[in-house]
Image 1 (cartoon, rainbow, N blue to C red):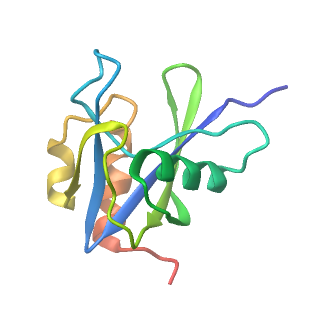
Image 2 (cartoon, rainbow, N blue to C red):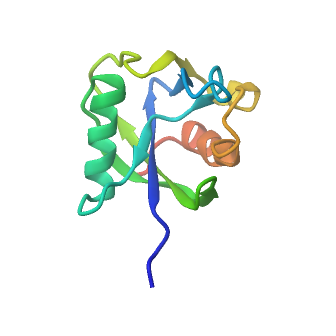
Length: 134
């Protein structure tokens, strides 16, 4: 029995706002918004994958915190698993069209990728409630 492959996402929060990234490709997804992250490679932990993906996509090191919300099945047979994260660096859009910091009240108006939209309630709770691991 194999388990579904996992895609990890980073809910990077700074000053009560969440970092979101605008897709540059593929064409049918360009302009839609997502959380930074990506596939967990074989023999890689979820935390290591998230740190690697944030370095590749944003050029920053992140400190990975607790899980946010529950797993969501997304296109391609993957499970999307979200983690709270922080960074002291200034993210740069290496693989995205642009980046933005959004507040809890704005999250529902973001043009999310379909796989990320179900995460909005958990993200609002994260921003409103703040991190619990301090």
